[in-house]
Amino acid sequence: MASSHSLEEHGSSSKRPCEYLTLVFSPLSAPLRSRWRNNGLSADFLGDYVTTFLPGNRSPSLGEALHSEIRHAVTYIANELLENAMKYHEKEVEVPIEIHLELTNDHISISVSNGINGVQGQLYKEFVERLQKQDSGELLLRQMEGQFHASESVRSGLGLVTMIHDYGAQLDWEFRRIAHHEDVIAVTTSAILPLSNLAGVQA
Amino acid sequence: MEDYAPILEMLKETLIKGSAPIVLDLRQLDFLNSSGITMFSRFVIEARDRSGVDLQFIASESVPWQARSLKNLQRLMPSLEICLA
Image (cartoon, rainbow over all chains, first blue to last red; front, side, top):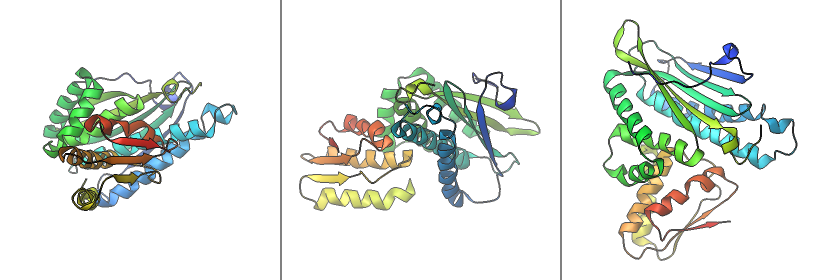
């Protein structure tokens, strides 16, 4: 199974000091439509949460505007990743949907994990290959131009392209097999935001 | 995206019924997900494809998504005017 992963180890096992937070959602308890509001609530919470630990809280030189930028970037990215995960999650397996936020002294990472079926997994891998090969500006333009006729999987990709193009995020993916479920793939999508990219924040 | 359909329809009606210029004041719109960006893309493409549409967006520099993402719509329609207020 293809695998690509460059994040630091998560949580307390990481050698670098970091703050982290993980939310885990049971996969079967609510239909997609009622999940939608919760995606926004969760994303807002993560955006607010991370600002507590920003260097600005220890240094008055970081203004409210920078906090607002970072809060918004985390909220936007978390919301997009959660919406995709809820939309494509394979409901037939008891795999939770998980979002993990991590703040180190030089970056913020947001990772979302969920299970998808083999067909969606293949489509997603193909889209990831395009993201890795093509210029994000050109891809963004084509995505916006092509919305009228785009397939479902491509349409969802606009969120990922904007993370790269508009927010300077580095994206990373991991695809894993799930024991006893041949047709389901566990996918983790991670967005890494270097703090230096966010309006000149100095950690 | 389907939740944005009524807004898109309303916006498209302004292209048919409205008189120039068409001005959208977005300053109070604090957050927009990618489906919302898709909706505005469709609207701007529709405006571009009708010749002679004078379209303006009023935006706020202090709303992060507007400062980051609105300029992408100008690539779809170079005559789109974005006024940062």
